[in-house]
Amino acid sequence: MVSLLRRAAIAYLLAAAVLARVAPAEEPAGSWAETVKFPANEKPVKLFNGKNLDGWEGHEKWFSVHDGIIVAKNSKENAPKVSTYLFSKKKYKNFRLLFEGKLVESGMHSGVAIWGKQFDKDGETHSYQGHLVMFPAGWGFYDLYRRNMIYADKDGAAQKADNKGGWNKIEILAQAPRIQLAVNGKKVTDWTDPKPELCGDGPLGLQLHSNNVAQEVHFRGLVIAEEPGDALITVENK
Image 1 (cartoon, rainbow, N blue to C red):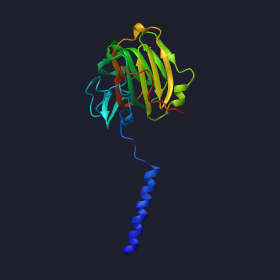
Image 2: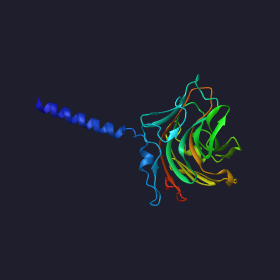
Image 3: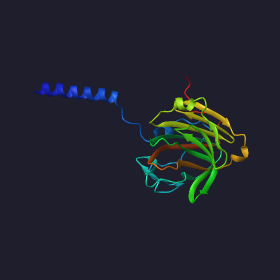
């Protein structure tokens, strides 16, 4: 009897080990950005504590925190008529930002707005005028309420790197007026704005796009270093 129980226990342990190898636990929220090694002369800071929106401001009806994730979400009946943003209370100009973004519902893009200001548009007090680094649909750069589309993913580099339907690991290296972008370990953009006068310091803005359908976007990680070096640090050498 003891021998049978021992054999059963061994079989159970072996099966559990196989399952653990086949289906590993999901990566903890925000772990990627927080474990990337920054250059020694840079001082990375967590912009999001994983618990609440301290250090940020926006409409609570559209932005909240769940399980270590910033959730931007609306229903069809409660959709923003003008794109709305969650703003960092601190302003930035030259920085390296690492985060993960995921489009959960609807095909409308989101993005991170930089180099601009909080903007009142048609009564929406939390809109943004400035540059938008778009993801994960319609990858490119958009100049909100000024020049419109200023850089498109013409060669499809970002589309090829896109983890469609899943988390995208994103590095934004902003050194006004230059923006470099890496997506899931691939360098996809290196662009310099011909109008440097439009590239001043401003809050970061996490976008929930205007829409008339239900939509949901997730952000996690959000680690930033100011006055960075000029090389991307998440690009895989392959």
